Length: 226
Image (cartoon, rainbow, N blue to C red):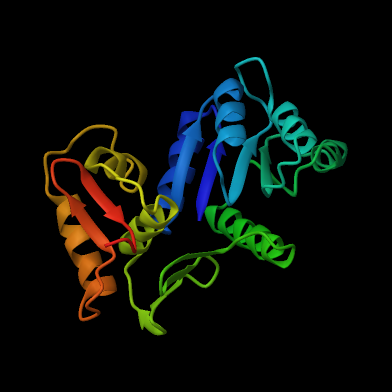
């Protein structure tokens, strides 16, 4: 699942990003309303976690209202320290799909996100990524190739999800470190190469039709084009 987190409290943001990443999800983070609005309007997400109170000229409800006016139907979970019934009603009436009061347990947040994703599936939102005979189900977290189930570890699943969302595009090592490992610096390790090698064994091993290609001096590409 690809999630946008719009939260200005660095402690809360770090807690949520760490938990979602460990659960195998891809997370983009904005710490103000301006950047949150830009990302929400320009990128495709499976769900958005939106704080109510934000710096940057536009608050959470303002972003939600603008998204709904533009017919953006991405499921949105509102986070807020405002716990009054009237405030929760206001948040939902603005276009939010669910409302979670701070402080919260991460397990509840994850369960609510899963529920939003199941709901969006019922309304036709894409929850399956495919390339050739390779399929990744975001709800069941099941990966198959040619009908055979592949047993991926959480990090391998997250890596494959990112590659499938950028299929037929060159993905650099830096992009993978930032989006899959949440590193905003180069740790000078071969962690990407090791995981790419393992993932290649899972999805391409014994098929005779490799999908995961290494692009010399550039990065990697997931493609069915030989």
